[in-house]
Image: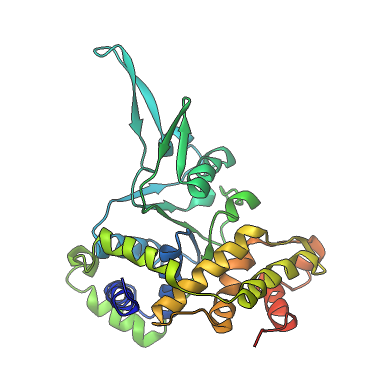
Length: 313
């Protein structure tokens, strides 16, 4: 696949989802960068901002398998991964796969499940496989987790542990749209939700071609080092109890390549890395209590790193 073909696929997909999720072009660009780079996305925002709709629109635009799991405190790991059931007729155990065996998995309100259930996703998100009863079950070439959580709810929620947060390539926030866009969205849903009539604009094979095309995007060693330096800078920043690890560096480089591909370029620029730095790094930081309640946040820490780390020329 050449750059022009890859760019066309991106535009088709972006326009298709954009016809359902209004006024979110910048977020959609980063969302699709994670998809192309083989990462996963955490959508953290207020209720009603379109988090679930975004995941559904993506699946409908590609025409691939889609499963949604509503996370609740009583959800068990087997409810996600599946289990082995004894078949008396065959006199053997048969594996019944759970909803995780799909192309796109929506983990809705993931922070409502217990830590035990949250941890069930660690292996499959990090390694693309599920270990059950001594057997390995591998995921397909497209496995994309979109998890949602509401940032203001505390009752009945369990904060995601650091290991879980590190499995997400990006954390994104949709935010509220402006008044004119909201009026247009209401008009589009007058008769029925447009998602119900959304048809695939590309197929699974084209998505896999898009992912493969990233291997042909060049990044200079100086820019790879720049991405690493940004991530490493968080580890020695005052007020940071736990900085970002190597997964952040890998995700930053891969998603920057995706942005270059979307822009029809054969190489990564510093702007691609800087554009994604906050979305890739901020959610992985653990701040000290003093800094957290002193008015600062992880996004401000990343902004300081972007200011202090020299940009290669």
